[in-house]
Picture 1 (cartoon, helix red, strand yellow):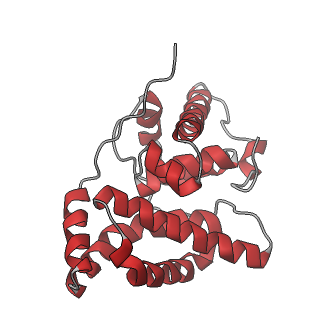
Picture 2: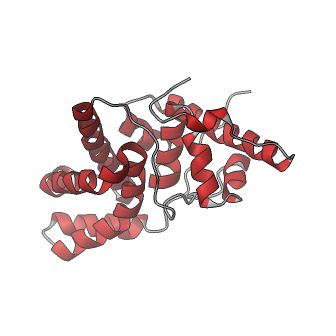
Length: 210
């Protein structure tokens, strides 16, 4: 039996975001500030997964590019989330190339890891975690799974949008997210039975794949 298509529950403020972006493209600076306030928390949390304490500087560079190229954007609020995530990811990778290091999970903002909706039993399992423990578990995932989960959980993108950010096929990203969430659910189950959950895997970073 094939894996079911990944549903997407619209983010609560996607409509407001889309309207703000449209006004901002007409030159409304206040509307651009509204779009910034909606997108920035998730974007900053995502960047912290790559560059740690440099996340705010990378985000600032990304927003300069976003503001410069805003007139070229076409899409709705959900599309804007994906577009800004792509720009931010490119800026983060630029920084890492200059450092000659690999991306890794760092300290994500505690309020960033909130699931966008009840997508599956795996997501429901994650919702029972404290944020701190959830971040420890996400850090233990292989890179492809961790980044797919971060894009879904922190930024709130659906499978196709996350795939565009990563430059991968939607099926591959959906599979990575599914496997990552399934792995987290297994770890939660082990903890519930008195196991330790994450042990040696806890040291793995987002820069490593299995």
